[in-house]
Amino acid sequence: MRRAPLSAVPVVLLAVLVTAGCGSPQNTLSPHSKAARSIASLWWNMLIGSALAFGIVVLILAGAWVRRNRPGFPGVRDGDRAALGVVLTFGLAIPIVVLSTLFLVSNIFLIRDTSLPTASAAPGDRPKLTIRVIGHQFWWEVRYPGTPAVTANEIHIPARTPVQVLVYTDDVIHSFWVPELNRKIDMIPDQTNSVLLYADKVGRYRGQCAEFCGLQHAHMGFYVFADPPARFRAWLARESQPATQATQVFQVRCSSCHAIRGTPATSNVGPDLTHLASRTSLAGLTIPNTPERLREWIRDPQQFKPGNQMPALGLTSAEIAQLVAYLEKLR
Image (cartoon, rainbow, N blue to C red; front, side):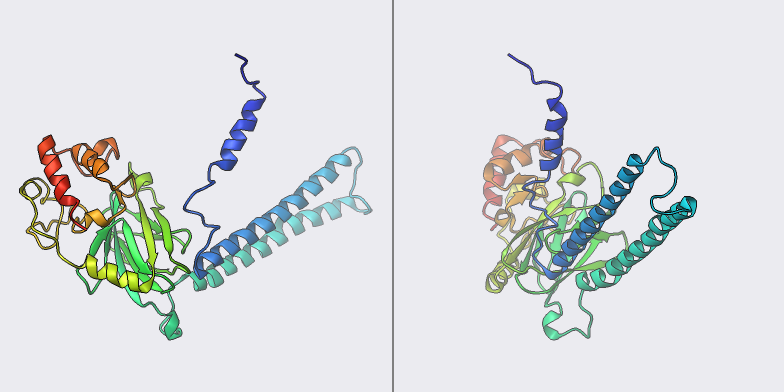
């Protein structure tokens, strides 16, 4: 069997590097809101400007290399003065102008387009809904003020509706980011920040913690579901309903960390499980929410997400089966 030549290794590595981000559901350059389009537009303008600047530098270096054996500046008698002028123009004046312009654009126009509308904004642009998102190691708690609805790792919003999201953290610094909908915003202890979520169309948009927060930072994801308004209202009404009485296994082994509304289990250490079966994933999008995966997760959470806060409880197979059967009814 012939081995691939060593000269092919750089090509393969370059191909891996170029294609590493292909197919990602978190694509900043696939905007689905006005705010995200402003960010993408700034990125493209910066790329074009950087490419032009790079091209000019390459041309100057090429010209210098061609004339390397001829002293002086081409077409000018006083070569030293001309060279100084080039340095001052391209090395000082132009960078100051470009960076100052970029600073003004990103900190005035971009912030204006990505921030929450002010009280003086048109009624149609003002937020119609407020959601609270609390960051934990390593999952997201989602609450809908004015209702008892509480969920985890999945945010539902009505499509084509401005939504205010208030974010804060229960432990370390996190960062809330939905690339296709808006910029990232930090979640700092003892401080509440806010960001606007608006989706142009119905769909599912992936979010992620964008600030390193510990061992399982990379597995701290969430979904934003932009639903038709009528479907969102139905979802919120269903999510606000309490659950049925918990089984004895849950009460004895799980209620010290989890809450299920309508039962004596009221702890907020871990995610609220009132409507667990209606969610699409477990453990911050780490695994799909299926009976098989749920059973494996309960048996040994650390095999999927080492370092997460849920311990293996040492339940018997019969206890796990009883617990999974109950949790699968929580829709």
